[in-house]
Image (cartoon, rainbow, N blue to C red):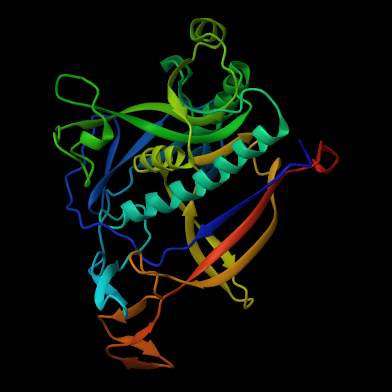
Length: 364
């Protein structure tokens, strides 16, 4: 297994967004805190005996969870930045829209989810390929939901650690885990799919008025042969539901993109980041990561052994000619604004080689 390698390529797209509207955000969870343009839900659990340092108490036992696309958009979000022109076809082919790449933006969150889904799909597909080449059993990827019983609800870190344990007991070899703090219900208490939920700015017909109910669970894109679900529930108290197999990379991408579009977003903290120039700046980062990898797919097991970056021209889908970008807005060039800038459309493509880390290199 350790000698298997796999190659992949990643294309960084310049812009891809969707114009959507906003809808109100509501929930019946006991503790609700208003915030700018949305509502923030806070899950609070009983504290252990004894006094805790306030920062520790807040970090581990009181976490606010948002949903993507429930914030506010910038004025430029979704506006046309440039158009791609084919010199041979003599026509425009694409509109490149401005994207702020924020998860909370109701306009750009669709692009943000697509990029996150593409990263997950690349890693999970290469994991599947390496398993297949290694000749091991149970290499097929599946979408499975693991739900804890209500008496095991606790702070996020404890639940996540417990989720990893029960997944291993169930037979999961490795995979991607995405945390969802809420389920969506209509006025009758019936379950509502996110794609039809009124909280979703990109909801499709029929759109059902729904609210977010706090009910933490973990979605897994996993490999491995799972034990019988009834036996698993008796052994752990948890319930798992297998939704289906993911046979192609496109299946993985579509599933991951959908799951990311309504995953939990933890409150943010300030972090001092060091730039390549040596300068340090303060940025906001999530307090907890909602997307993690476990088992053979974890960062300590599945690694990138080589990465090559190339600048490649984008070609016309019809005739194959190199496309040009015709900017619709003023662009700064050498510190001065330029109107009507026309340049070749060049994109950065990453070619990666993946492999399992040799066991001798893994820390005990």
